[in-house]
Image (cartoon, rainbow, N blue to C red):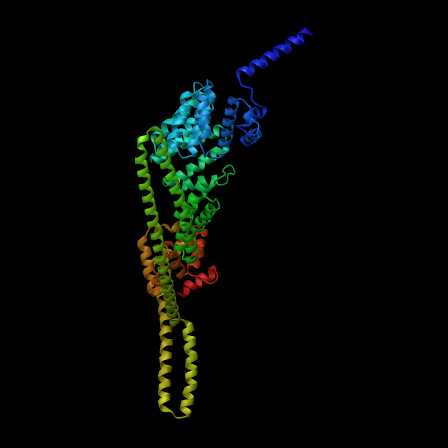
Amino acid sequence: MKTRFSLLFILLIIGWSSCTDRPCYPLAMQEAESYMNSRPDSALYLLESLTDSISSFPEETRMYYHLLCIQAKDKQYIEHTSDSLINRIVKFYEGHDDVDKRMMAYYYQGSTYRDMNDAPRALKAFQQAVDVSTQYNVLLPKAYNQMGSLFMYQGLYDEAIKINRKNIELYTKLGQPNKTSYALRDIARMYSMKEASDSTLHYYNRACDAALADKDSARYYSIFSEMGTYFYQIGKINSAKQILLDAILQNEIKNKVHIYFTLAYIYTDLQLLDSAQYYYKKTLECNDLKNSYYSYRNLFSLNKEQGNHQSAITYIEKALQLKDSIDTITQTEAIAKINSLYNYQHTEAENSQLKLDTERQKNWLLTLSLFSLLVISLCVYLILYHKQKRTEIILEQKRREQIEQEKYDNSLAAIRDNETKIAELDKLLNKATTENDLLKQELLQVQKRKLEAKNEEIIQYKKEQELLFAEFKKSELYKEIWLASNSEEANLGLTKSPEKWVSIQENIDLIFPHFTKRIKDVYTSLSETELQVCWLTKIGISPSGIARVLNLSKQAITNIRTRLTKKMRIKENNWNNFDHFIEEM
C-alpha cells in the first residue's frame, strides 16, 4: 500500500513540475499543436473552438493561442492582411525568455509583412528570427528560404543565392541533405535570371536528385517540369519537349499551366499549329490570368496566319479584356510595393515622408498616362485592323473570282458551253438561210467562227500543256523527284538544294502559267513547305511520295494538306477534293 501511495505521489510531483516548466495549455491547444504540420485545417478548427473562452486564460496562453492561429492560417496559405495582432505578440515575447516562441513570433511577423507586400519589413523580421535562434529550430531553414524569395522578388539575385546556400549548409550540418531541393531550385532560378545556363542546369539537376532522395515525387516532378521550361528558354527544344511531355502525365503536379504554355510555344516553333492551339486552350482551362492573356494573343496570331479571321478577332477581343484586368492588378501591385517601401521608411525616418508622397504621385500619374496611351493605341489599332481586314477580304474575293474566270476560260467546261452556243447559232443560221437574210447569215457565221476559234485555242492550250508536261517528265529533275518519292534514301539532294526548288517552280509555272502567283495571290499566308506540297501535288506526286521527297512523316503531310484545305476553303475536307482543286488551279 505504501509503495502504491509513493508511486502516485511521485507521479503528481512530476506532473506538477512539468506544468511549472511549461505552461499548461487547454487540451484543444495541445491537440492543435500536434496536428499543425500534418493537418493544419484540423488544428485551426480546434483553435477556433476556443474563441469564446480564450479571454479567460492568462496572457501568455492568449498570446500563444493567437500565434498558433496565425501559424495554422499561414500553413493553409490564408493571406495575412493586418500586422496589428502579430506586432502585439512580438512585443509580448520580446519581454520573455522563451527563445523558440520569440523566434516563431518573428517568423510569422515576417510572413505577415510578406503577404502585405512589405518586403523591407518582412526581411527585417525574418533576419530577427534567424538572429534570435540559438539552436536548431524547424523554422530556421524556412526563414532562410523566405528571405531568399524576398531577395529574388526585389531582384537581388546574388543575395538570394547566398541566403539559399546558408539554407543548404544548415540542412547538410544537420544530416538532412535531402531537404535542400527547394533551396537548390531557387539557386537555379537565380542563375537563370543571371543567364548562367551551366550553373542553372547544375542546380536544377541537384534539386531533382535531392527530391528523389527524399522520396517526394510531387516535388521532383514540379522541379523537373520547371527544368523542362528552362530548356526551352535556352533553345533546347527537343529536350524541353521530352521532359514536359513526361511531366504532363504525372498526377503529382497539380498546376500544369506552365507545362501547357511552354508546350504550346514548342509546337508553334515546330510549325505543328494544331498541337500548339490545343495546348494554348489547355492553358486557358487553368484560369491563370497572365498566361491566359498571352494564350489568347498567340491564338489570335495562329488563327490570323491560318486565315481564320473570325476566330482571330474573337481571341484578340478576349486578350484585350484580360489586358485591362492585368493592368489593374499590375498597377495595384506597383502601388502596394511603393506603399510598403513608404511605410517602412516612414517608420525608420519621418523626414522621408514628403519625398515618398511626391514619388508616389509621379508614379501614379505616369502609370495613368501610360495606361491611357495604351488604351488609345489599342482602340486605334483595332479600328485600323478591322478596316484592313475588310479590305483584304474584298480583295481576296475579287482575286478568287478572277482566278475562277481564268480557270473557266481555259477549261473543257468552256468548250462544252461554246459547243452549245455553236449549236444554237447553227439553228439560227439555218433559219436565216431559209429567210434568205444574207446580213444575218454573215453575222452568225462570224460569231460561230469566233467560238470555234476560241475552242481551238483552248484545245491547243491543253495540248501545249500536255506536251510541256511530257517534256518535263523526260528531264533529269523530274526523274530525281520521282526517284525521291519512291525511296527515302534518295531525297537528300532535293531537301538540301534550294536552287532545285527554284527550277521546279519555274517548270511548273511554264507548264501551268501563273500557278504559283495564283496560289500566293489568294493564300498569302502559305509557308515554303505548304507551297512545295502544292507543287508536288500539281505534278502528280502521291501524299506518301511527297512525305519522302520532303523528308517528313506521313502524318505531317496529312496535317499540312488538312491545313491547306481549310486555308483554301475547299467545301469538303478530304484529299480527293484537295487534289482536284490543285489540278484545276
